[in-house]
Image 1 (cartoon, helix red, strand yellow):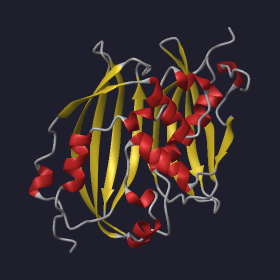
Image 2 (cartoon, chains in turn purple, blue):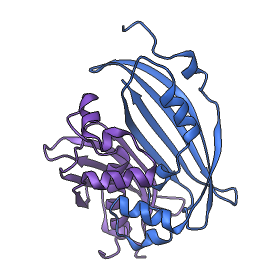
Image 3 (cartoon, each protein chain N blue to C red):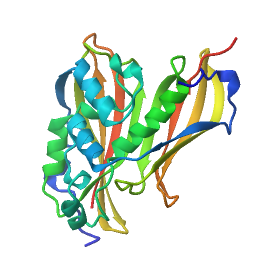
Image 4 (cartoon, one colour):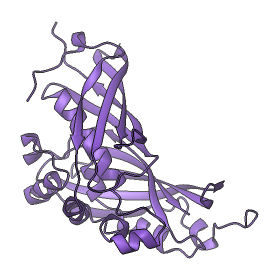
Length: 143
Length: 141
């Protein structure tokens, strides 16, 4: 694990360490089982093609889970995730890199809490932003 | 087609109806299975739920209603998800899930007629504390 990040360490524009994932069909089957989302576009290629998709696609929630991991890895034990959202704008296919990114957009103190807004997004190997969203987090202070 | 509503009476009748509660006991194995499925090795997930775990606490009643309602649109995608966290979900918690359809919106998109279905889900623990509030948008096209 990386060292704890503190409120004083960040500013608007600070980048969050990127996270790259490479989901396989097996992982999607595991995710289907763990989440109860058995929609066939996520593991049955014939079904996905018949639905006009280019192949088996990654669950939006799984891509958002990768963004969640990026954030909680960064926050460490001292930070807290308060809000998380993502819009699924494009397609992530299995057996392709899912590149998770984040950038602090604003930091402020509210009710004595050290808050930060973070813009988050997923890119596919073609550089298309397939998930865009934001997070609200609180960070510990060095003070 | 563009003038015709794909919002059937059946779908409309689901608006603002509260479904649930559906009750989930949070077992260590559930969290382990979920953390493995999302490939997140953080040891914290042995005790508390990772951020997207509420996705596994499915409001099945509402979703069956939404996904099985008759409409000319046959294809389905997840459009957006939003979660707000108030308390952690921990091993041993008993989480009650209630859900409702809050809005239906029909649009003409590049794939033709598209229907957005907006839902809200509330996750409450055994002490009556709201632990998470979620919103999810489903797309039929």
